[in-house]
Image 1 (cartoon, rainbow, N blue to C red):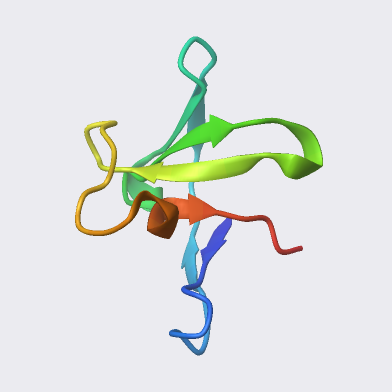
Image 2 (cartoon, rainbow, N blue to C red):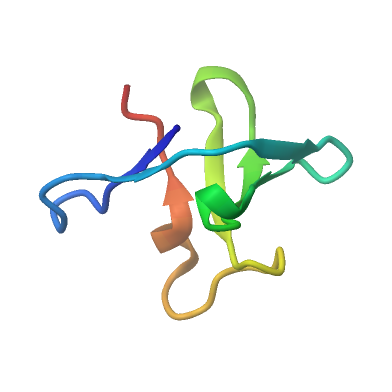
Length: 75
């Protein structure tokens, strides 16, 4: 499951369940239809790794600064 919450903006997280696929050549994780076809690029590794949210076609999200689409592990 993926829990997604805009820190300071949403009272509780959105929950996505389903199956994911990791493309090891591009380090892109894609969730299935149950996960709303979300895509994330793995940046770095280990405890310092981040996920960068991509659009549904695998391109960078538009509509704001790039830092807005970086996901940090909080648990």
